[in-house]
Image 1 (cartoon, helix red, strand yellow):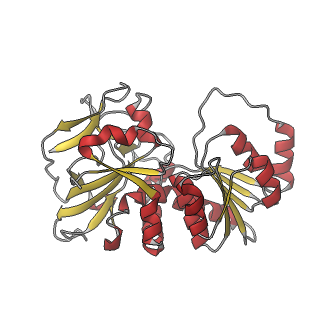
Image 2 (tube, one colour):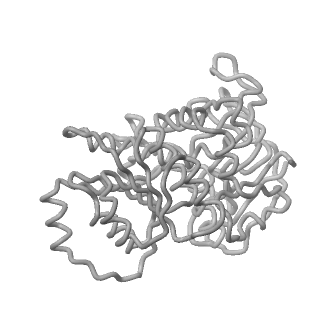
Length: 351
């Protein structure tokens, strides 16, 4: 079978390889791969900046934003042939920390977790793959064209979940949310914000292309001015930060309403220096009971939340979020950035 493979830490090594078909371990599902999403983490791995192959092997099968259809399922597994499924990305460490032992492997304390398509376990970028039933989630059959959006949706489902958990330490009734960044994570964060009934605003630099219309069609408001213009005008109760740009991050923190909560989901590059008035920042956080949290990855609870959110969403809107579909044999095109890209996916079934 064909699989999209890479030598982690070696730029230019991405290729389609012929590999043996997987043999499911007892109790595992055998799944026919339909598509994988391409995200920034995949691009970092392809550029040689990140990633670890399985122990004892040089190459890693790429792909953590999965979508597949069950071909074989053991009796009693809760799955049946034909089910539309995604595979969970992270696995707990072999000697679980307290968080992993309680199913919160997204909050691993010792860093010994593994991740499909990223860290020490092959990903889902192959024509067939296997997965343990405990790490597979069923999707609504109507999501066949867009189900690879599930994993990025889990990231924002967790972000909103964490915001609410923090907010409910006291009376909490947010009304206005600002999402910074209109990439896939930002747009999906906006989707979940509108589903919570919030007045959602999205900030991004671009003025043309699909992003402004995608935001408007959610019933949200699109902004392209700098954060120091938009922030004071909105004074949002909640910010979901999805750019990782330092100036935007600190602007988001500065301009929240009292008792504001900022959830950082974008990873900032190191090395860029910004002048920050640390005293003023500390004063504002303390005197206004503000909170800044970071959020990454997701656990099974968030996968279920994401599945429900996608099932409730407008399918046409989700389909428009995917701006390019690239066949596996043309994989290199999926890693070429184009001006109007929002989400690019690689199809594994030849269509």
